[in-house]
Length: 61
Image (cartoon, rainbow, N blue to C red; front, top):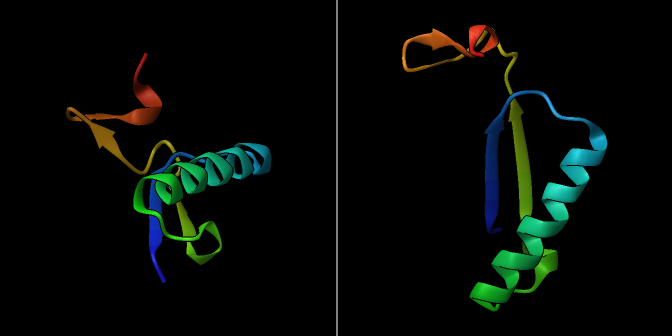
C-alpha cells in the first residue's frame, strides 16, 4: 500500500480531488506502480493550529 500524506490547511472537496488525481498520476508515472495501488491521506489543520517562522499561519499576510 504505497501512500502519500498531505499536511495542509483546509481544502475544498474539489481541491482534494484534483490533488489526488495529479499526485497519483505523477507518482505512478515516475515509479511505474499502478495508480490504483496508491492511497492519499489528507491531514487538514485549521490555520490557527500551525505556525511558520514563529507566526501563526492565520496571522500571516
